[in-house]
Image (cartoon, rainbow, N blue to C red):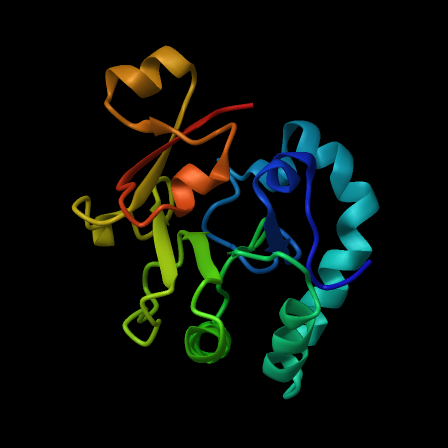
Length: 189
């Protein structure tokens, strides 16, 4: 398995994802974590080694170069979802993704990056315009959420999502990746 993967939902939209070991990189979000419940929990048994390898790769000085090469080797890639599982675990790691996104902003500005995160204590100001951060409600740093900027909320039902005027992004993550989508709704599973 390579560093970048696709699940069935992402494949429909042409999105590639990068995942890390859940729990080890997102200490403040286990309660609502998709990666440790439901169908994701079933897949976790098969993916745990892959996520651990990705986590180890992020700690290496060659991570930025390796990720640029991995993305460059994919055909028809337009979107990279950073963290299909896991989260930004340090400022240094976040800065590595900023360097990757800046590289593609120069050489292929059609490639867009996005990430859901509850690590709102980090400084995201170094991210270039081709990297969208979606603040996820339900973590330790909810007091730092700016509701005028992209944010995600999990709802029990589709109707509840619509009633709160959030975009239902559960079936197509491209809607969440769209720069104009501010209120990202996800249906609990």
